Length: 97
Image (cartoon, rainbow, N blue to C red; front, side):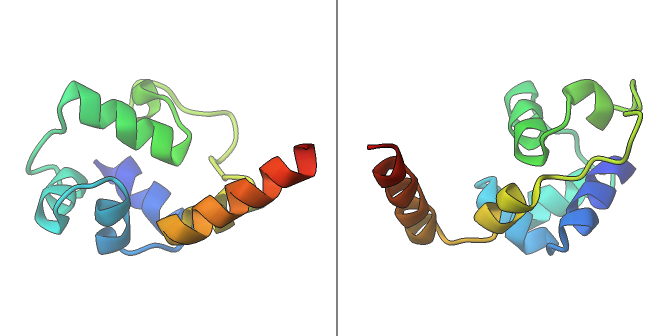
């Protein structure tokens, strides 16, 4: 999937980073990018949600009118460890209280 590679590179992440964040082995994720293996329906949805794109876009059925770029906050948030992400959520909830 060429689009999968492009989306990952747009985030400036390595394959192992995305694999870890999607709870996949690096080999499985690499196989998806290289077209050697196809993700299950559930995994395809998780990948689309992660990259904030549609499944149709991943499958090459649609093209967005503009390049897919995540808002800066999401890019930064996704680069945090799970513990750091929890701290951000707690902070934001405190702002709303």
